[in-house]
Length: 491
Image (tube, rainbow, N blue to C red):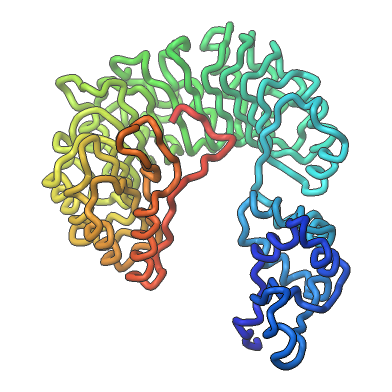
């Protein structure tokens, strides 16, 4: 592979700016028509600069139209969704290149509302890209029909604030495997509309749904979705499900379960246990469990069917916990746990000694002290992923991390009230690949605390630059995380 002279590389964003400037119509037309003369302003010269014309031969370059398509698509692949749309609007050549590349738009989702606003050109644009993920807000029956016509290959769909009393039109989507229904304004009498999808759905999320059917009918319907790998049931306490023993054994492929636990004070012995005949010691295939609004007493015998569990997330119901820490029982019963996420509840000191040595990932949004992290480092010496969001200040915690957790590969922390030298000390983590800053905002006016700018402050940007220099740019720093449009908003 031949080497490339760095001085000959094209600054894509700079070119985009040039093409989008109406005052530079001559250069824009020259670029798009294939004129091989380089715009002197793109090359770094002013239009009247003598250096552009008198210092040797006229600067020449290969036109954008003559560069290999593969080269442009490789450049575009590094752009964000927003930058891709900007580049697409610079000229017809780029528009044609980008619209004709399906991999370039793979993984992108779109949010739609009031579908009557969109014309045929808009729908054709989505269809050309073979869009497979859509979030539909305040939709109706006719909207699903329109989606099925233009996007027949749709695989992922979120219905937010659905306005119909039934969703039978979902049967039109023969490739749909991921479905999310959330905050539906109209109560649903049943979930029979899911049955035509029983052979294709692998992920189902029902969040804050209004159902008029009993919980037993809900579970009977879900138990027929035998291909499910992920199930989410979030509600405000209106669903009274005494036990999951009738549905979990039917879902033989289910690996991830997320459910609201606000109604439970104590988990019964058969809460997770397969029904009679499945074997008293049978284990469920569940590998990931998420419990919302949890404060239920539990015994080790109740948790025996969860021997395969590798990931546990607990969002406690109360910020001021009761006298008994139920999390101790969970940790004692799951010695092979690899990932633990705890939000609220008792201080870390109450259950730190129960952490299994198999832990590789830990999220702590709890009350903790510096000495608690020393216990964690002893209990989980091979920790690779740490998300640290203590209720108190983290100013004294960040400086300890390189010595306590030398194997970290990803780290998420807050930077406010952390000394610059402590923040920069993160570069001592030799295996660290990704650092996420959880509080990328600042207040420009100390006298006006209500004025908040939700982007990295100049100080944070300088710290990130210094950190990357110290680490030889081996650490990727994230200042804003992007949520999955189809995920539940409860968490």
